[in-house]
Image (cartoon, rainbow, N blue to C red):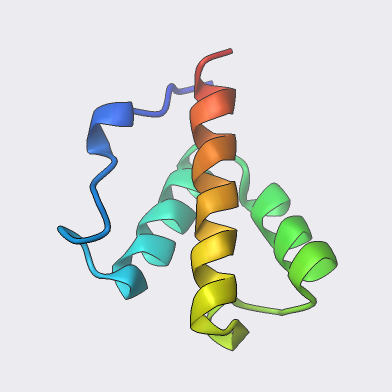
Length: 75
């Protein structure tokens, strides 16, 4: 499994919030974790896409995904 490059993470002030979800989704797909992305989105947030989330819920979801990507990359 390819490793997640932690150096590619950027502070939210350097990268707009809308791009964060797209960047994280691309990284999840790269690590073959798209199913996990969809499952968390559906089960925990009751949404079909990130666009359906409120800004606060989107930020929370992105935080969860980012932690998961970091954690799974360290295995």
